[in-house]
Length: 345
Image (tube, rainbow, N blue to C red; front, top):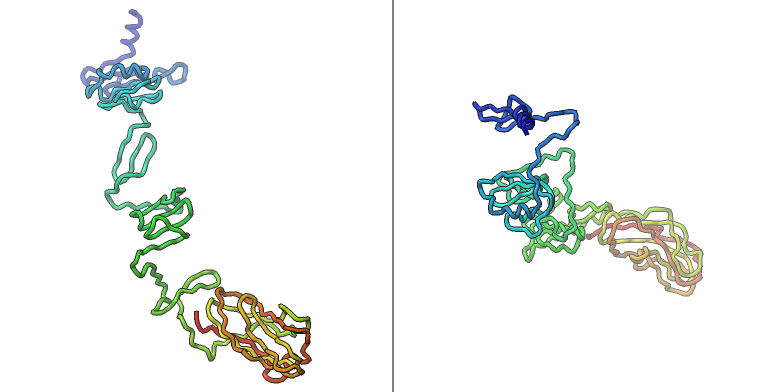
């Protein structure tokens, strides 16, 4: 006992003038300054707080009040049946007393900072209210939100709603039914697109890549806007009745809308119905039988109006109603032509 006492006296240094205590140091820098005795790992160093089970800590509930605020204990096990003060002792670890209850060190202690940021143990969490303007400088780093909820991200609920479960966005609704839904109730004017092409009475159209722009509802430039068919005409009517037969022709439709077609061709043949058409769209030219004898048949109903829902290149094919092969193809007058013009979207 005497030896231990002298060892302790040797290791502990007191600075009575400043009320400081040093262990393994003669020059304490704080109220209690503990230096490691060894630095080579030959023996354990550190401070061991009192070690108690959760139930033993609970047994001392009446002993802990505001005077014990800041007390540190190491719980070797969770409390079996918790009390108000020991409700957080759910696992082994360090706990400190905050004057009311025991808090787990570095885990359950919730520290709420300003401007919507909380520090819960070692985790920073967003939440709460912003109290000043906030900017985030991303640089070249993306900011990504991942959600599988139907209203996983929203602004004022319906102002903007992102449906992560179905990959949809709603404006004015939290239940969008398509990739982008704008619900303005009964108020007109839910969508506004300004790109310099807008104007009174214009409609929104797209190019082949789906890029939208405003265009006039009616195109009035008939006289100088005719576009000829592409390709070189071949005689398609040498086979049996039916079709489709190759004509060597196609038309390039630049945008959806209504198009006016005109065609001129003459055939010397016995009775037959000859026609050019675009599959799924309609006839662009047709000649009807007028006689059972061989004669020139000129096109009737040669002017056609067709609607195209999508731009693209459309093949012109041919057909006929019986086995007669024309003796003269594209003979007489007029010579062949097939052209078209758009007149309405």
